[in-house]
Image (cartoon, rainbow, N blue to C red; front, side, top):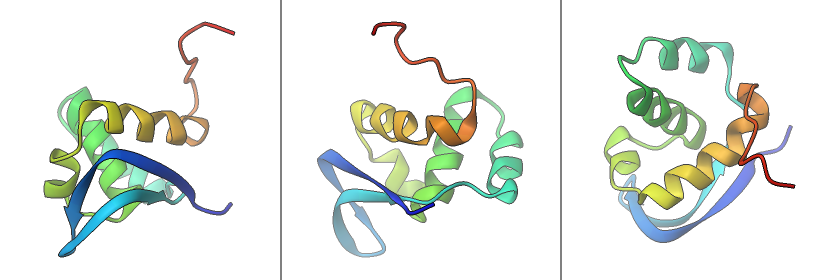
Length: 88
């Protein structure tokens, strides 16, 4: 599958560049294993975004909560079990 792009509401710095769009790859089993080692739900979210966006954890930590939520919604089909808001 191609990468999924998520436009950020607030740009972040990653690898020395300003980033306004995250390009998210489909997670590998290794990405999922790394996420599984995180100690709490927020750390798991940060881990999978770090892996799939191929950006440093410090960049993920600088993301707005809204942008984190949008990234997770984009990744949800790969992660299974995401039911959205329950609204049609």
